Image (cartoon, rainbow, N blue to C red; front, top):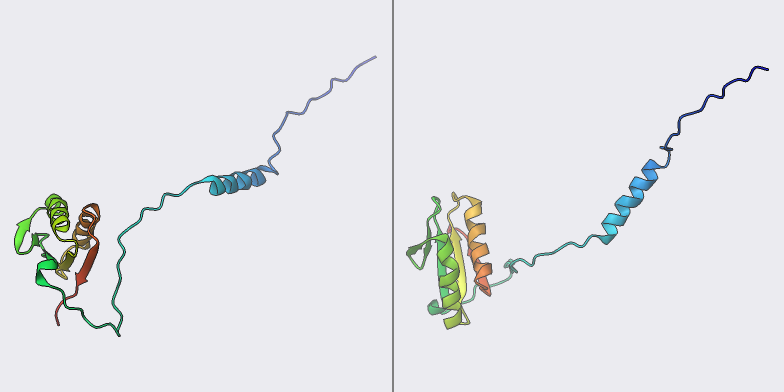
Length: 134
């Protein structure tokens, strides 16, 4: 009696349900992920019906950014790290302080963003952007 040897099939992982498992994992991670939302600066932009308001000059902190990146506060040249301490000190002395940022149109956009970040760190409450004249 001759016995035939059984050929064994190799064990395989079924790949037909792999896409289902991947989709379920994706849904699981999307549902359980927590996104940290950083609160930015609140900017209230004027509309066409709004009229300009008069502000006492002693309540204004004028920040100018030149095309070269030179920053001045009330016509005194300052470095970027100094903005926070200057504005924080002035804000503590005057709660009605309004920071006015005027950026040269040829200046790199990042300069204005860096100044806004410093004002946020200094906890400036009122910030306005001055547009070019003309």
